Amino acid sequence: MIENQIICDCNDICKSSILAEIFEKKLVTVEQVGKELNAGTGCGGCQVDIQDILNEINN
Ligand code: FES
Image 1 (cartoon, protein in one colour):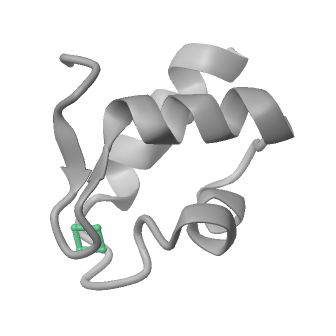
Image 2 (image 1 turned 30 degrees about the vertical axis):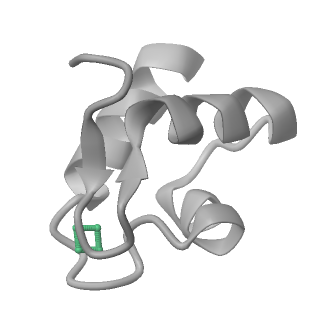
């Protein structure tokens, strides 16, 4: 995945924004990312990708 790739099309949120937020606020769930960034709160189709990013960082 490229860093500036859009992950959440509904809310126009790229991977680097999600990564920064996860690091900064030590997020561990898709729900938390949604709360902080709105990513994943539209159609929900990107939630799998958000989970992958969380796994990349937290596992
Ligand atoms: S693409 Fe992220 S909620 Fe629709």
